[in-house]
Amino acid sequence: MSFVARTGSGHLVAMDGAPTGGGNNLAPRPMEMVLLGAGGCSAYDVVLILKRGRHDVRGCEVELKADRAPEDPKVFTRIEMKFTVRGRALNRDAVLRAVQLSHDKYCSATAMLARTAQIAHSVEIVEA
Image (cartoon, rainbow, N blue to C red; front, side, top):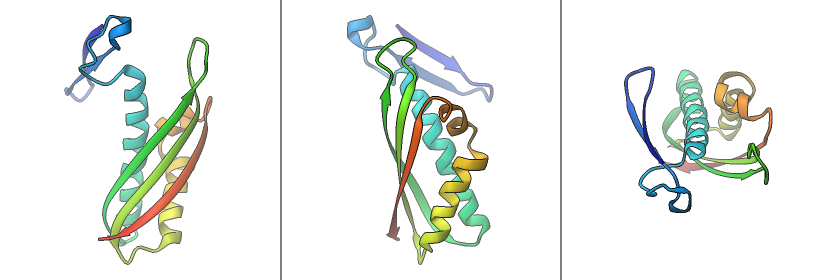
């Protein structure tokens, strides 16, 4: 139950299952990869939007928590995204706007997940 996938850009990614399902627990589960993709997609958008606005952003982390449906297909039903954005003299309204633009317009991963999951955002700004 361990798999290696090759992406369209030629990168390799390992995935594995839980030991109870025959896996070895050596890599993320496929559904964890879905959440990782959504977090990465949205963080990328947020940083890009802030940099284009000439904000001194130094980094962005997204902590994701999710609930899944109890029965198959066990789609995500709720996702919480906590953004920690680091930078110098960042304007809170600009950061909130970047997060909202990612969710509403740019992040195709969260756009797909929003079809089954309620997605909530929170933001913490850290001076760096």
